[in-house]
Image 1 (cartoon, rainbow, N blue to C red):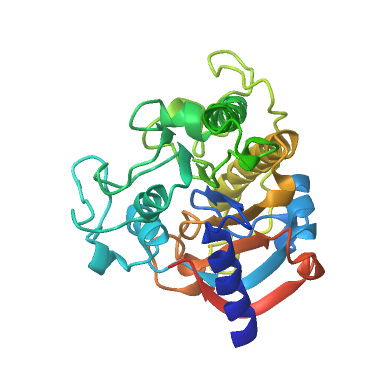
Image 2: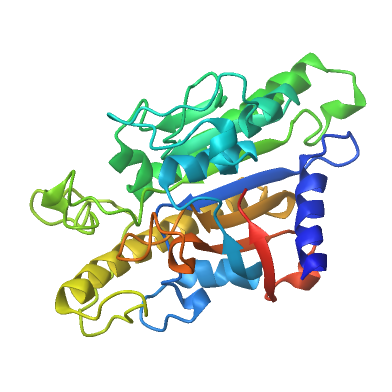
Length: 338
């Protein structure tokens, strides 16, 4: 178990290295309030072919945990390596809560930018202040609708494509300035990138956009007033089909909520498939460490905001092109998103 944890740390260390001999990239995908309702974790009802495909190229962790079962504190810990009581994000960032990390905190995007690594974020940010969490490329709820950048998988796909286009354009400009230098050929002018794609699925939305359903499962489904997400083929489930987690009361209301949640899990899965296809089409699949996880437990009784395993345990897939012998393996090692 300790060996697997050390291997994970070494993978991170090797990818964060910016030596001239080896430049690698990182794609971090974080879902919102997502749990283990996927085929990867033996849920035989919900259909998640893209996560299954990623799992076949990944080491799948079964004992990964967030440092705190709440959105902004968890995300701040992921982006700083510090527990929320050390980085200052004691509670939620948005609205009346208005929590922020301390001004002197050196976050991951800040340190990576200082190390000449191109940083980008697409989707839900939910941390602040901006000076602590600066990204070179940013499309979040701070400058867009969170529904568009977090749930509209076509919009997310196009933004990922735009990030890669921007990245390559910058590299071309660098090569132009380095004309005559041996690095002017191939990808020599490119610096590594860190792209953080933060989906808003599978968060509840009945409190804020009730017209779209309890989980925004109706958003973009093409029906009257719902808009249409071109790349999304909605998957529907019935309350009778779902697998009720042992910590959730087995009632019809809970089953109906789980059925709605499953629809957004399928949208999340299709969105991940689009993101990974953009990575592949841009030519970075074999140069990029891909990590998939979530910020906290599912939004059900005993889930999110609780210290039980049901609130803190997270899915985690780590796909390293340099550790292919571990592809398709699973690990019982205890690891933290901190």
